[in-house]
Image (cartoon, rainbow, N blue to C red; front, side, top):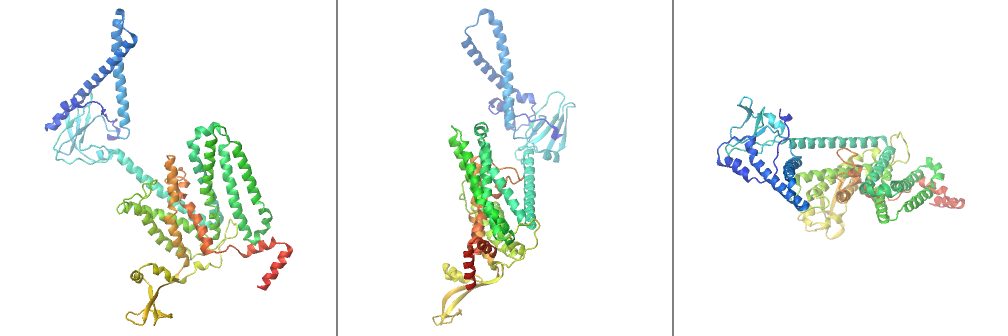
Length: 606
């Protein structure tokens, strides 16, 4: 029954309640229980409404007389009739106005029946009044009211069923009675909606992880397809931000607007990944027969660039030059953020899936640990704002994300270093890849590592001695070549340096710590840039492509810069050179006959 009740009657707040306080609320304050009918309760409101309508009608009649001049004697009757009609119309218009106003105010509130009465007493019971039999039946408040979500604000509910008129009754009780706390229907729906959003977010989050792991298992070429699809979606979402904002300008005034934007994208994609394909061909002797065609990729990319440039300039319209230049700058910025930063991500895939998977998981873990630290410790230790463009971020979340990412990266790198599928590079394009076999890079092999002693010189002497595993090395008799572990109380021993030796350590774990630092301190600012863009254009998400997560940019904002950092780190600290035997053969074939003979002669002399 509670779910089928009509909408509650709300009273306008701009009407003076002096009469209501005198006739109705005074009885409540006096402490005498009073039972008022709806007509008695609304009588002061009616008088106030009529007074305001008469006042409004009098003003209108005065303006009519002023505009129309004095009325003729023959029109007195019609004037009176017009006045009556005017008052009637004003009354109806005022009622409609109040109805619309109350309807707007109650949009965020849940419907409470008109035949529901408010009761405040100390009996803790709900009265069901049936006016047809003039009997009042009391029923214990049960879970129905709670499930219906009726907010009572300290009053209990009276339900009346009447054949004639409805009644609203307020019965006062003991002021010491605690208000009955119930959850409103809106709160219930909001809570259910929140749980639904969490479920959807978790479901599609696990689905994305499953797709990622499945493609990683299938092989490198499928991951490259995923990267390509991601770049297309990133570009689409970012250029659509300004396209939707200025659609009223673009639609009929600027020809080929979207065409030129996508031409710039495809030109960048061709130049970026044709270079990558040529690198793969050079590194595989079985694909060297394609080099005669691959050498034209640079010229064709320049041809695409020239055609796109000419078409873009030829579509500039007088009167919209500044706007179109702004749009061109935005398109170039989007290309730098997407294609530019992801230029080398496919190199990471073919250098070994380790260098593609690890940075992605570091960013994911940083987001997770930062969120966990933020909701548990946010603004409890540091109340200073972290960054203004993203006010929900906290210093505790930032620091907690860093600590968690360092620990996670350390152990994840050790785990993945044991699998050849993750560490071996790939040099072929195969739809059905087989098992990978290679000579593992030394960074993926367990070794005994000695930490540089200079690191311990940066910390106090006493603190360095407290680090587990640190050995204090001493000189014997002042001889710097005769070193041994310091013995307390030995007069011939003098401190020389601290030494830390860690056995069975994978060197790639040290590299993982460096990437973890970048994922914690630098990569999140890619997300802050995305937040600034959304704030500038009034967006909650870039798209709704992934339910519960928004668009592709909402998920990849921190990954873009991280992939570029991984490629730089790999070529700087892991693989100092990219020269290989297949590439040397490729370079040899490009030489003239005399250069080839000279090359062979020099190689034989080595």
